[in-house]
Image (cartoon, rainbow, N blue to C red; front, side, top):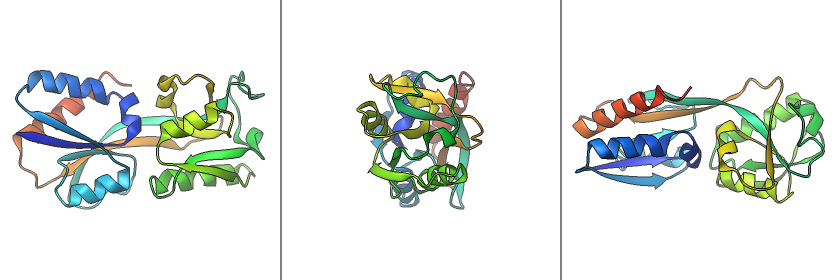
Length: 206
């Protein structure tokens, strides 16, 4: 059989490859079909039964779905290596006032787009959003080239893109949550096994 798995890009830095390789080793005859989609695209594909399971970054889970919280990580500041604050131990959002902001686009991640802009506004900063991108990795890439600053999930530190520096934020409570979703009425042995593998795989991740 096949298992169709949707995921948003940051999952590649949150333990998904390890979970998949372990699961594949114990289910060699099952074919895993991976599709990289935004959270909103995954929800619509799950509702149409075109995906068996999805890894999304949104608290808006429709009725009729089971979910596991897979990862919860802080947001960190992503700055060009040449930035005056690049060497700081931590920074407050008010220290970034007046800088150009690079964010994921509202269509791809409406929840986090709104939250990031709101966090800046609460820090007394009406950010000038200069670039809206489809992928968090593209956000880091633009910052690494000196085209602005960003707030990104901490796991992206593992992307290790030259020219980008990640600095912890003070006084920011917002967490970047990842949920594994599947339809409650899906009766599929492979799906049940996969969900167990996800839960087992999380024990190793703080």
